[in-house]
Length: 75
Image 1 (cartoon, one colour):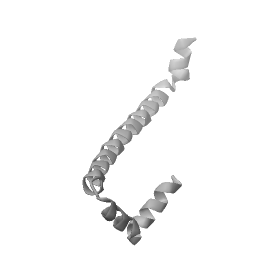
Image 2 (cartoon, rainbow, N blue to C red):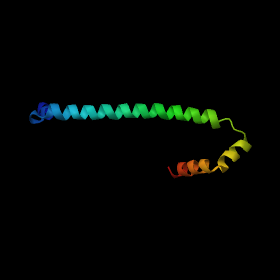
Image 3 (cartoon, rainbow, N blue to C red):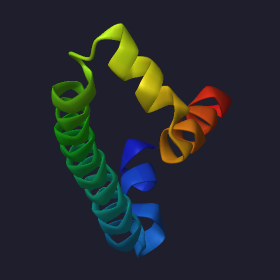
Image 4 (cartoon, one colour):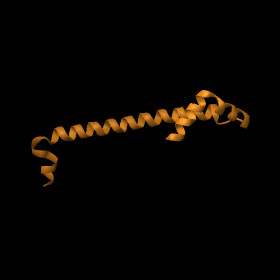
């Protein structure tokens, strides 16, 4: 029974290789995305993490930052 599942009437090698290839790519893309997100997060914290109240209010009033903040609230 288990052999039949793995061999799939001779197509098992194609099915399992395609499955493993897809799984590998998803894991690879997840890791790359996580690394890039961490780098961008660290840049953001470095730039905006230590703002005073006045600087934060000034940053919120800028057009580009308003667009960014409005998109984040929708997520």
